[in-house]
Image (tube, rainbow, N blue to C red; front, side, top):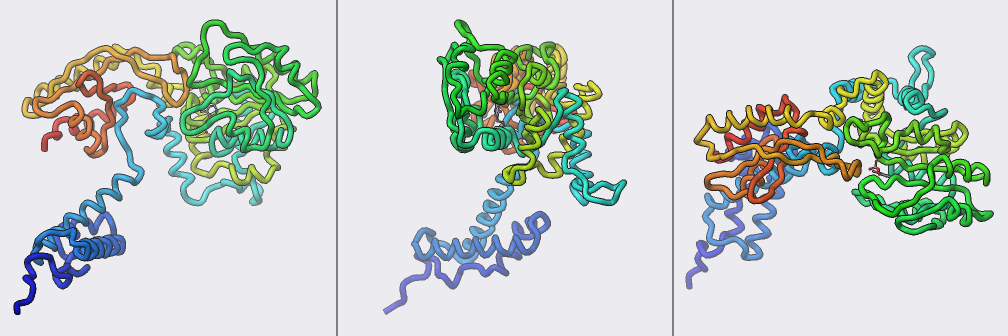
Length: 469
Ligand SMILES: *Cc1c(COP(=O)(O)O)cnc(C)c1O
């Protein structure tokens, strides 16, 4: 009798040890970026995986050397998977300025410096003049008051938090009146009826999808009503045969009836942006002036700052929000507040060009065309790349649930490749470092330089020219 041949299934004895695996070239190369401890943990995960696969008979004929090689490949793949799920910078060549999946508004240089400055110990809740406890977010609140004309301001984690806090504190266990045309869903799972349900207020829907009149609000008021809510439809427009009362009419009705008026303004334009085609975005100061008692909006949409929920309104109303225990759970952190202060300072100086989202929104198509042509020349000078590039006219988008009918004209770089399909080209760009995010239309990869910083152009070119390597 002979023993079963060891060459048919790999033997458990031949599985490389963690130490052997750590001495292989892939492991040595990964040590600097992962650190010894994480690398060792991954090596254990890999050898355990190989053992399990051998027991299952899921690994074919393998010699000891082949198993070691297999382990090295698995280690590389595992670290690659980890790296691709971590947060890292990308080049946004989609032309969508407030791209929610790519982090919405890019921060200004000043905001980035402020984040870095606040990332150690900082004056988050400390007053250096008196040496005693200070007010969190006090300076951001002052700037918000100056910019909106509101009596008081408060900063929470995002606009969804702001809506939840406001509805909970002002109308829990009582009724909130809202028009059917405003029961919208905004990207990222924010649905007005669901937020209302979570807050414990009873939603009283009135009117119809396209038309709601002041009398509809008036008729719905009962002894249990506390709040009238107005929601900016953001990513959605009802056009044609429509009616909605002016905010000032709603304010008068609310106040005559002993109720409060809350507007969820969403996009948060602080100034009139009609020069950027965003004339139908309400400004926050106009809402305050029209008599809204409290207004909420996002920090990372048309404000161009960090993710944040900004609340402005009447002093006594905002103080009720601040004192509620839910505020403690929803308040903004120091990095957010630092970036927000710097962004609001740019707004106060009227220096909208310092804010990347607003600057990019305003770039003329001829300027984008010129940049695109320069890049195309450099691609053409490099025949070995296999790339063919031309410019075509197209449209950028605001994104982030703002200005759904605003499509700034742009000049796109349309790319095709001698050997690669558009899908392959797009996916290779995504896997370059930093990843380049593009779109595909008509079998071409389209790059919109509106959302690419000029400082990123050399990296973009590098990614394009090294594709086939
Ligand atoms: C975008 C938006 C929200 C959600 O804001 P986040 O800051 O993403 O939480 C809520 N309400 C309106 C009207 C919006 O436009």
